[in-house]
Amino acid sequence: MKTSKQIDAIDLAIIRMLNLDGRRSYANIAAELGLSPSTVQQRANRLINEGLLTIRGMVHPADLGDMIMAMIAIKAEGTRLRQVAAEVGKLPAVRWVVICAGQYDILLEVVCEDNNHLLSLISKELAKIDGVRETVTFPYLEITKRAHEWILPE
Image (cartoon, rainbow, N blue to C red; front, side, top):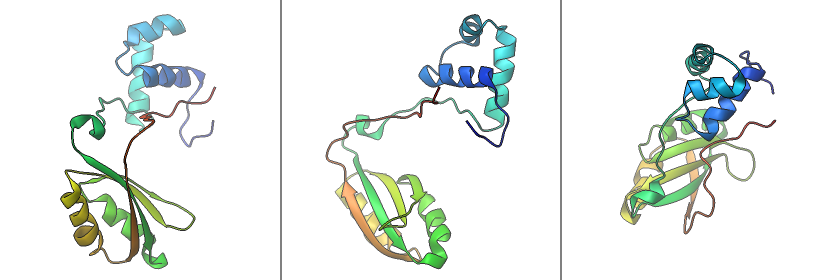
C-alpha cells in the first residue's frame, strides 16, 4: 500500500481493527497485537492527527425517515471543472462530490427533505453555479448495499 505518510504493519493492523469497530478499546487492540495500550493509543492518535484515520459515529439518511436521496451527474465547462466541484461541495444537501471521467464530469450524492427540496436544489441552486452546463438526476428508489468504510486490502 502506498501513501505519502509513513505507516507500517502495526499501523495497518490498528486501522483495520478500528475500521471494523471504531469503539474498540486501545487495551483490547493492544492485547491482540501484543503491544501496550499506550503504544496503540499513541499510534492511533498519530494516525488521526495526520489525517489517515477518522473515527466517527455515522447515521445513514435513509434510516431517518422520508428523506430523498439522489445521485446527480453534471457536465461542466472544462475550464471551470474544479471551481464547479468546489461550489457544488458547499451546498448543504450535498454529501459527496467526485470529479470523474466519462460522459459526465462531476457526480454528487444529495440528501433532500422531499421532492420540492430536490427540485429547488436542481433548478435554483445548481442552475446558478457558473460553469454547470447540464445535470441529470438519478433519484434512489432502493439502496441495496451500504458501505461506510473501505476495508484495507491484506
